[in-house]
Amino acid sequence: MEAYPRSVMELERLFSTEEDCRQYLYCLRWPNGFICPKCQGKDAWQTQRGLYLCHSCRQQISVTAGTIFQDSRLPLALWFRAMWYVTSQKNGASALTLKRILGLKSYQTAWVWLHKLRRAMVRPGRDRLNGVIEIDETYVGGEKIGKRGRGALGKALIMIVAENDGEKIGRIRLKQITDASGESLESAVKQSVETGSKVYTDGWNGYNGLRILGYDHEIVRSSAKVGEDLLPQCHRVASLLKRWLLGTHQGAVRHQHLAYYLDEFTFRFNRRTSASRGKLFYRLVQQAVQIDPIPYKMIIKPQDVGCG
Image (cartoon, rainbow, N blue to C red):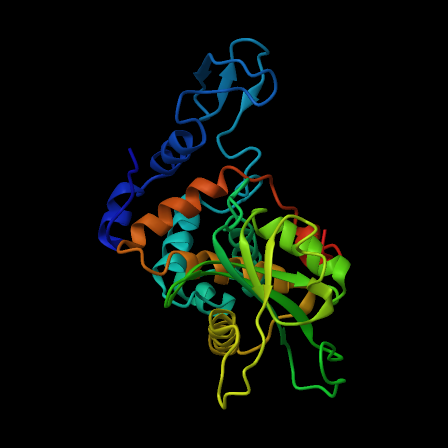
């Protein structure tokens, strides 16, 4: 059963102590009972320090070990409030705002926390999109001089994949890619879309190999109608994404971190119709205990972004 707070008052009541938070993480991490990450043993005792002693290998396991909360020196209760605030705000939060709301001493702490939470917004093993799909690219970044067409110096290239649900947009995927070559585009499509799906793109030759890869590929061509929008769902997503980057983050997003902001936008967009903010909080905590720890050095010096 999915249990989560419905209001900030309920959040404060349910997670007033560290033990409350640890027990909640325990239930989400091991919903069917304890499993030792070292030997897969299923029997353990809880120590006075709040650790779990595996009966088989005698390893002491913390409920936060192997999660994004590992090695954090600040209380879990503060993390829970951060996750509630991030998910309860329609457009998210900047590091400066989070610092003020939580009373953190350091802007850097708030910035790192947000980046860790963004990584938790991607569900491990998430499904690829299927059905009727629109695919296009857009550039984001400062207004710098660049060549026309599919190239712009100083800007980041983003592939937009959107399910076309009639007049509505279904789920989306956003992927930062190095260039608009066939190799980059095809790799990104394979990661985001189930084979056999009907895929609409424009006539860019980088998409020419999609049919060979098993997609029902159709090129949308202009009928020379004034104001015609060939890929309307993708263009709406592009407009919303740019507005969000400028509004919530004032456009101050570095290219080397952009992929994680795209994950946050996707998380929010795909759950935009959820009636309960508490459900978003639940999903974020649930995914936070399923991904590996993220060292500080990995955040400040992320790997080069590619299409793989």
